[in-house]
Amino acid sequence: MAARTTKRPGVLFSMHRDVERVLIGRDRIAQRIAEIGGEITADLSRELLRAGEGDERIVLVPILTGAMVFVADLIRHVPLKMSIRPVTLSSYPGAATESQGVALRGDVPTDLGGAHVLIVDDILDSGRTLGLLRRMIGAQRPASVRIAVLLNKRKQHGREEDVKVEYAGFEIDDEFVVGYGLDYDGYFRNLPDVMVLGPAVEPGQVPERR
Ligand code: IMP
Ligand code: MG
Image (cartoon, rainbow, N blue to C red; front, top):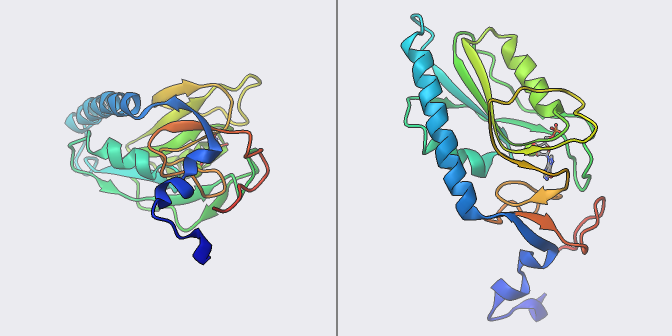
């Protein structure tokens, strides 16, 4: 362990060794999130203007852990009174890069009747995660439900579940991406850009702990 001490830990322990290229840079992400935030603000404001009494609640439901960076930036472009109720769902346990069914950890709020709900996730892939959550929330008779995702993966053979997404930051090809909240085996969420993994990290393998 002592041998790993260095005056330049940023280089020795850099996570950039495992990533190949930037797919979407931080400036484009920031610009796009500002646009989406504006659309969401306009749409929810319109809903509130015609809402009946008791229907004026806005509740954001970010899906952790992947949506944490996206939602942190997005909410600062939506200057409306809202509460934020994160849920923890995951469909990529550990080092898998193919969706393996959705695991629900923790609770989904059960008091969303009459609320205007915005579900926020990092990426729409097979559609299972957002499909499940949209159904669970829809069953509570909210005043409205919308979904915002940063990334929408193009699927050549269609999705396992077709999910309507009202706001999508970027459409991307069907490849595995990390950064800006998205992980591979729990790592890389802190990359400021959306990036593609390098050949050192084969899908299904755990990246070497550094
Ligand atoms: P779905 O249920 O298959 O649509 O999967 C959505 C979830 O899988 C997202 O919330 C992500 O956490 C994860 N996921 C899907 N594609 C990727 C990817 O390319 N990189 C990292 N995580 C992904
Ligand atoms: Mg996720």
